[in-house]
Length: 161
Image (tube, rainbow, N blue to C red; front, top):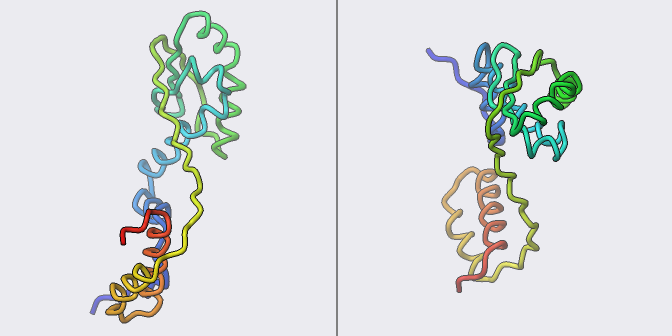
């Protein structure tokens, strides 16, 4: 008979699920290497990030595309500091060497800043709709979580009725 898995009290966070899927070499290493693109701008500063962007990493060698020869020469002197800042921001030594390459660096679009919205009170009709749509869910915890999710969503949009 197959072994039953433990009952989950709450849904697992997506990062925990992805970490489990990408467990082991080389996928786990690729997931770690992806952090370089996330920390690049903060680690090198805006001035460098506008003129140089990471392109790839293989076996600890980070290839960086640089916009011009003068900037390539300047970054050649700063390689050690950049490597140390990147590894520090990532939390481990992933970048062992930096290879500079001439080209047109493509900046990743910055994630859009979401402006916090002040939730509005729900109308009696919206509260009734949530109650009717979740009434058939037997699991109390799941019913409450789903009702809360629906209420938070409706509080962010304009009322329809």
